[in-house]
Length: 247
Image (cartoon, rainbow, N blue to C red):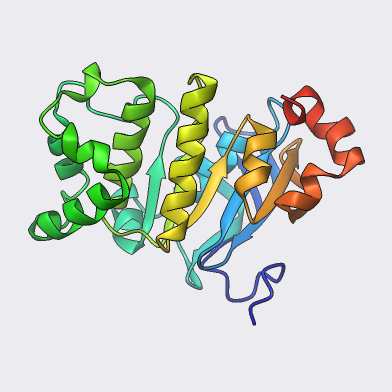
């Protein structure tokens, strides 16, 4: 039986990351994380804690100055985005995550630019998870609702059959009803066998669906436990989550 608290054998692992955008200015100060096959990991914490920076550093969008990121035991630090996608990591940014002038079908095709011959097979897989994308396949992505655009972005990232999907604040800017839909979609993706690491401002909802959570504070993982344990930890709520946990 897998010990999910043990980083050994994790599909994605980050150890003691120091990273930042500007020379000499570190946002991450020794952050660590691991995600086993089939896990759903949530990253929560105060504004400015480095949550999105942490996620971007896993995908090579922020320079890692110290520490290591490994995928299936191999270091991926310094690899280009296309190499990471080929290796099995999907990334959905918080904003500008669809091509608004393209149709839904064309957006999904863009997700297969590295393996176009598998488009039909993967299109069937993704639209089985998100039937609405099949209904909307000829509609321009820019005309969709916020929740539907998020669905397109997730679907496109799934087209290359990733081992791990990284989601940067997927519920941001959505109504409460659409937020719930996004969280249900995330659970559905995870249930289909994809490991998920998500950064979320909606701490309570995130902890309700994730297997394990990390609370980031000042660029370091201050607390980690099961989602349920963090959700019910009075100290974590008081010091790190505040009203976010009660929303």
